[in-house]
Every structure is written in structure tokens, then in C-alpha cells.
Length: 314
Image (cartoon, rainbow, N blue to C red; front, side, top):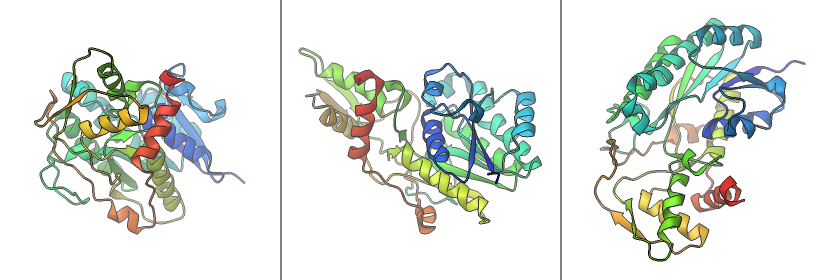
């Protein structure tokens, strides 16, 4: 008996690896995971047989068309993205290519092959002034990252009536290096602040974030995929989020506690980032939870797993 092919585009990144691991455990599915650089650290972390991997540049249209023609997916999950706000500000054209053009092309190809598409978006489509945000709340992104992701949502949904967008907040999970997540990227500065004679390190204590664990998100994505394959309507926009509000300063203190170090941290009570960021973009995930989908690993529990397994501390 053949199983439906699930095409995961962008499997080597922070979220993609978690989604790949979740889908690979599902015996009723056949996973096809794409990576841009098979020698990269993220790709090497994928524990998949060669037949389940494909090398792909998402901006290579002929390669995309060949991939769809040969693999014939029943569902497509798009995790490839430029998700660094500062990089998007420096290279808006590059951000738009990855966050808008690529998802639209992928969704159009999926529609041509009768496949369902799930695209990943962000809480940064909102301005942070009226949280919590339901799926039908009016977007108002403050930066280029948020604007390109909002454009990407519209492009993907317009390209295929059989498509869904899942908006997510700040993500963290198993990393290949500290810089891969905005949570673990704080570790080097936190550790440096604990050295004798070190100056205190300032941390943003203004913006409220909702760190969300990638293995939890991966299970949400798996469940949405299975529901579509079972015949349920899974289209339009959905929200998913962790429910523990905290600032970067709060996160840093909890990292220091988990590492058992006496960090010297100073709260900064005004916006501290060069790129404009919203104050509080809490996503209301009640629609997904009402469908019986709910995965919520406590932040401190998940953080200890991430820190324990990070390559830098092995």
C-alpha cells in the first residue's frame, strides 16, 4: 500500500528539522524533505534516508517543477523563509524573493497537482497594539520582515484555494548553533556577563514575546496535515502560540538559571532594537485548540532540553 507523499520545503532550518522529525515518525506518510545545502549543519542533523531527501533552491523554478512532477505530493509544507528582521531590512528584495515569490510559486504548483499547501507566517504581521490577535484581526506590520510575510500569506492563499497559513511567534528548539534562534542567541552575552569584571549586559524588558517550542509546532503541523488528508477542510489562516509571556530580559534570566551561572543583566525598558518591532503580538490560538490540537511544553522544561543538547555544550 502506497502512502501519500508529503513535501517539506526547507527541512534543514530550526522549524523544518522539527517538522521533518515529526512527519518521519508518522507511518501513514512518506516524507520528502528538501534542503538547499546537503552539507550544511542543519541538513546533517536530519536523520533521513537518501530517498527521502532532495536538494532544492526554492527560487529555481525548473527544479521546483521537476520536483513536483517526480514526487507528486499530496501535501506541501513550506518552512523555507528569511525570518531575520534585520537581514530583511538590509536586503528587502532578497527577503521578498524568499518570503513572497517562492511561496506563491510553490502554492501554484501544488494547486496544479491537486496538493494542499501549508505556509508558515509570523505574529509580526501585527503592530502589537491590540493583542491578543485572532485570525481575522487587521494586520499592520511595522517592519520589512512582517510586510513580506504578510504579502507571502496573500500570495500563497491567492495561488491555491487548497492552502493554509499558520502564523507563529518567536520560535526556539534544538539548534545547530546559538544564533539559530532569538532565544539561544542570548547565551553568549549571558555567559560573558558572568565573567569576573564583566560589565552588565542590557536586555530588552519592553517587548513581550511568547516563545514557542518547535517540536510542539511540528506536532500541530502534523495534525493539521493529517486532518486535511482525512478529508477535513484546513484552509485559510490559523494561529499557534506558546502561552507564557516574557521579555528578552525574562528569557535571559531563565537561561542563566538553567545554565547555573550568575549573569549580570540590566533591563532596558524602552525599545532597544535597531529594526522596529511590535510591543505585544500575542496570537489567539483558540481556533486550533478548539479542534483538539494542543501541545504546550513548559518553557523552562523545553529550554533545559535545548541547552543540554546544544552542540556548543557537548
